[in-house]
Image 1 (cartoon, rainbow, N blue to C red):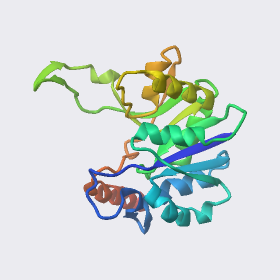
Image 2 (image 1 turned 135 degrees about the horizontal axis):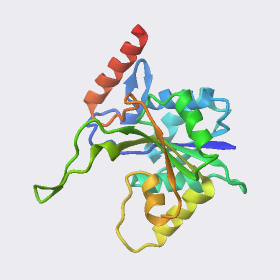
Image 3 (image 1 turned 120 degrees about the vertical axis):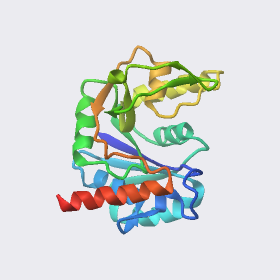
Length: 232
């Protein structure tokens, strides 16, 4: 069994628009629907759990109606990304150890091929992530001074989907919740890397086009990507 946790509970503070980022229109439909449709059409996806903020539950329920045969739950998210991920995970009612794909709804360019690669990789690893190589030099900076310049040949930018066996990612989050430190992960692989260091995390090379919509200008970039694809 393969279950998707589609994260759409972010506040979108950096988006600075009266329309919530998840509902912003791209190519004639809400941003969230782009990834929802691709997951729905994939024949290996059994269930989809959408995680949204309380005020968007009604609207997202309307958007998800055409996909209702696979959208089994719409779950209220938390105040942080990790809280929303955990809410989506614990709402999965199963005694088995299914494959879980966690995806940012703000990444509209998910493809069937990417989904298949993640699912297949979970036959080998208990945790995997899409990532794309860094084509720019990255500085580590402390107090306004460069402290280190990592070899960019070893650097990759994390993307979603990220995949896990359910028992693995739940165990990571439970250890995090029992930890007294103020660790705030920015993705789900970060939870496994910190709290389950014995678990290797596989990497699948993702396309540069798998961008995350964060700022209003990103919508213009996304539209340009769509138009370029149409011309191919």
